[in-house]
Image 1 (cartoon, rainbow, N blue to C red):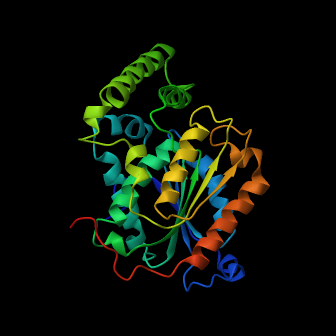
Image 2: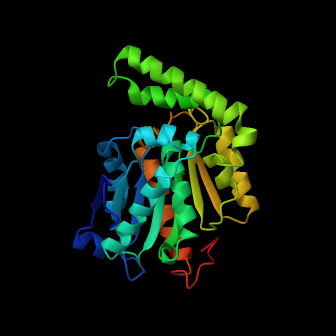
Length: 285
């Protein structure tokens, strides 16, 4: 069902860890980590340990980088298909009644998260899921051409022939400029970019943004703008500015503070939640 062609990892807590966590909910939380473009599972596993130590079930998944960097520009539904398979895993493992927290990294994770939210509010089965909150690390960015090229270059560096690497970067640069900037006033009627779509998305569960003014790929201005748009819709939004850490490097630079912030948000989100949705209003059938 959900795990078809999906390269994911799921880790269940040790019985002793679950007992120590003393979750008030009858079920331990499920934390779903959505990695950045080009993220390796070994990197995502370090973040997973934060939640595993709290007695949570942890699912780690990163969409293929080609899908992240190229599917949105052409309006393809490949990320939506991946999001659907990922959410179906919860039913496959019979953990669909647990409180769910998403931890989303950079634009790569945020693009996938866009379709997660869409499905939770449009799909009859998936609309029963109990989402309690979302942590967004180093995102989202809004049509930042330089940042997008830098992000793709970081993925390609060291694993691609130099000539091929620059050809891919040049083609990507042209695609971003033409489709996401020059023609976007027209193409947005067929397919909105992830940033514009998520400013008005229907979820109202709490959000925590982890960002830095020193981020060279996603600007703090874009993060702060998104935060303000969500607050205007009544969403409970909190944020931590790590000031001098680089893109998706906040945990590496400030491991203790990062861990404390994430664990506190998780516990507060589960405590504040009113329980599973009795009947979520679907956007469409």
